[in-house]
Image (cartoon, rainbow, N blue to C red; front, side):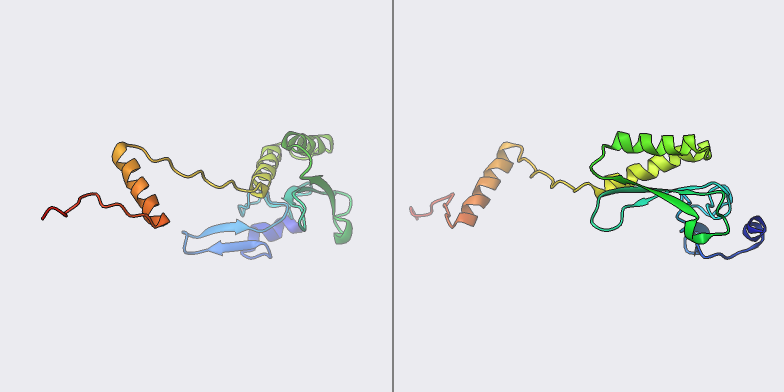
Length: 165
């Protein structure tokens, strides 16, 4: 029944239409790893699906969500979550995602998308460093910078004296 609704329907709860961008259709489905509205990537249509979301709260890390095949009619126990905290290295996180999906027989074509999404989430959680101040290059620029520093400090030097007039 779910297969027919995806193919015939023009609407669903996860569909996001963007007419300004040439009619692009995106998906907000948590099991959709690439956020593209298509049957291949739709998690609510396929029996086995994988999702990667950000950890809730102030915790850094990702949560791996896998859809259970046996409980399709029980929404409360439809998925299994695995928390992968920010204290774990990124390689261990990726290995856990790959091994959990491979051992359970989930679609192998979704593995690179799951790892890429986890990587993007982890990268967004790292604090950004301030850019270093740009270095002054060249004699004229160094002289101008020195004069500017002197003006800021309250020291002014006359470059030319006109006392002899």
